[in-house]
Image (cartoon, rainbow, N blue to C red; front, side, top):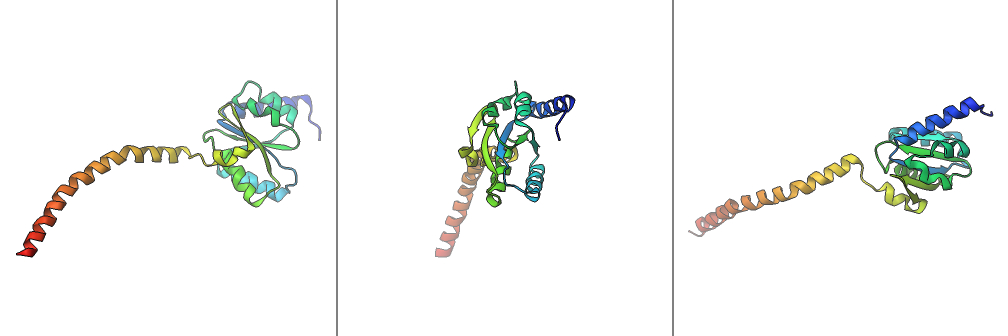
Length: 172
């Protein structure tokens, strides 16, 4: 079903609104996927707070102009699905990577992270990026480590003294 001019403008506006606030974007060719597989992909994307859109390439190119997602326009060819993440830079890559494990028909063409194009062969590297909560947790563990070490060291002095007194008592 062909879209009229007003419908095309609406699609461009919608995609532009999502792309403007996106931290990362992914492009994958979905040729060979059936409806059930596409539904599974969409469900996993919803669970990861990733917005998926199937848009004509010409409309997508117009929508991505002057956004950080514009870096992916060279790989927009063929039947592609766009994935946008608003908060987590690795979310789109994780959704695509996890889906590809069971469905090899999905072919990732590239990713855009903070305005930088990332080739598809770097998918695993981007997918392994920690989430915001994981990064905060790792930072807090690093900040807490010196304090824990100091407390353990200070606690070792009376413990050692107690062991020495107990050893002397056992000798007598």
